[in-house]
Length: 609
Image (cartoon, rainbow, N blue to C red):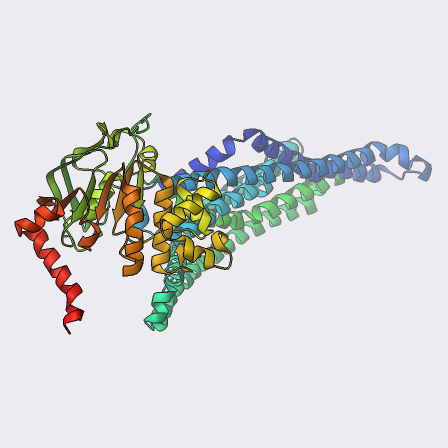
């Protein structure tokens, strides 16, 4: 981790702390008060008792009167110190709770608003691990600051301030040693900083490998690849072990150097305590203060290396998420972007230009139809297409023709290099992304379900929907019959990504969600591909009803899915090859007619055997 990343981490943590600055100031004051009362005020009271005892014998009946001020000071010091201790605990707890909330919200908002490029190039498990480490690092640093660094700084200031008038030579020597000690520890800290970052990155990779393997456990088992996945995990695990070992060796070396400096301080202290009275006429009480203050100081500075190691590790743990927070948004709203208002539902693709860079678009969108696209290859060049409001349009063509990319651009999951897309005359790049996507019901080829109940999944686009509306949507999507057969019905948990349901069942739940969302624009990307022939037949009427009065874009490899639509667009290499109704395209005998002939032949083939 470089200095800039550490500075950015401090920036994010500092913002979270300053948002709740009263608790921060209370914590500092309480830490200072705790240190002063329980270390220095106690020592002052005890040194007074020692000096009085050294002045001569005190009769039994005069003990109370002689030592009453010192006794009161000790009682008040301990009482006040304990109060400060509890205030210190309270402030740290509040900062941890409030800071955790703010930072978690910041991370969630950042990740949820990032582009698909960002998420496609990262392990979900690694992001979860980084989030946990980021908030954990904040908690570690707050605890360290309040319970170690502030008391250490307080102890240093108070030791110098209180001993300087009494033993100036001792204070000068002690201050010089502490300065040298701090510089050495700081330089060692700087050297170890990258090692902690590397160790954290290795741990994140390990979490990612584990998450990837567990998430795709069905593929692992059905392919008999357990040994291969174990090999990948072991390799990542060994990287963690190696990184942690390098960090351990550096930490132990730093600790050894720091310990040597502490021994030097203790030698100087011992010499002054032993010879202070004989050489400089220092009183016994003052010697008690020298010993107590210096001993307390050495204990705190002895922990400085350990504290620096903790700081190092915290910055290393936070570095991954800090980089993510600093990642620019590839698809961002313009300032004060208005909401999209759809009245008619007309869509205009106006002279679009869009291309891949290094296998993905400049905006990072991976073309699902053409995963092997060459770097720099144009998907669309001066592409134009107009859809009337309420028109039902089918997009067909061979793989790599740009069908899915066109719908992803409509959803603004990537930005164009040229041209614009308008809905009812409104440029979608100038309106808020949330309002745009709320006006489009999108049903992809792979159903997107949450690890929640079926009812929650159906109502995801309309969380205020009643149970009756959810049930009606399920019925129209031909999903009600299988849902009612489940043990918990609509309260059945679908499992992660809907794994407890079959492919056809997941797709019907996704279609029910689109029906309930009731958006004016509908995008179906191979929405019936996971259905068997009987389910597809039953759901076709539901989709036909759903598309009535809405602008609909239907992507399909099964041409029977689009045969009844108002218009069919045949794409090839990002260009419109043919357009017309099903019958018009069949009669022309072109690309579409050839695709239709091949598919219908495939249907008839079994009957001829």
